[in-house]
Length: 299
Image (tube, rainbow, N blue to C red; front, side):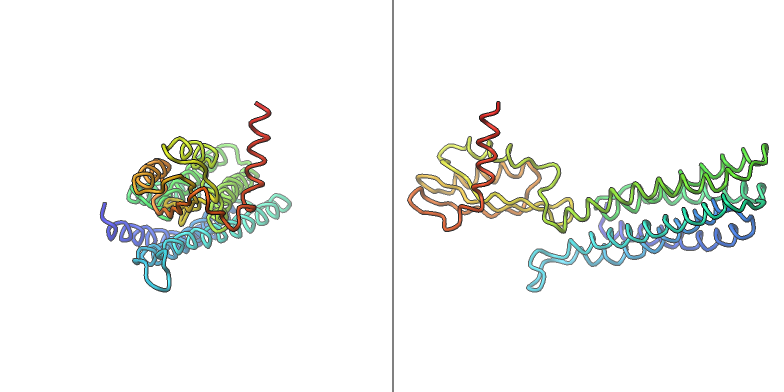
């Protein structure tokens, strides 16, 4: 898939969602349903975040320059952060509205709700289907939102049909709360993944212990310290390490690069040292080593 095509898809998804959420707000007021109004808030949040995603996705593809030597990838992550915050706020707002409604029930227009929900499922399914092939964290989160919207509408539709036959208006705010909690949980997950990137946390798929063991297996390597692995955007990982070897040479480096690339690490800086060289600040690693030694003694 072409890069430009993917941003183009995000743009169309944005326009679809924006138009639809405006339509929903009107529908929510007309049917007096908090479930629909809450879905409208969710969709509006999605539309805004997709809009931000669109611009930041384009921006994050810029090549590295002297101001951003790593490139602009993290802008894509900031897009995810803003999206997530919007969803967290929106969901809290929805839960509040639903609790108010549970305390003060009000009649709901079920036929209107069913009609809107059918329409909602169709429009959102079209948008989800249209954006389903993505290859960036940003794009994948856009698609996740789309699927959430389809689910949200399916839930509202089922609820509206049940209410139509039973006339239990309480189902409406309960549906609304369940959709909101679902969104909250996902948003929190997203939020922690984004924080991990900004806090330079070791990427989930990389185990420093395993990496260390594999590096030690390379012929000629005596020791390794200062292993740092971090991620630019949740996909592109970087690493720096100091490797002690008797005869530093380029074949050792080559082997190390291959090993690191197996761990999805593609931006690698290797410092080769001889045993005589005393690395000026090894103490930053002593704690890690002690915990490892303790680890080995236990087994």
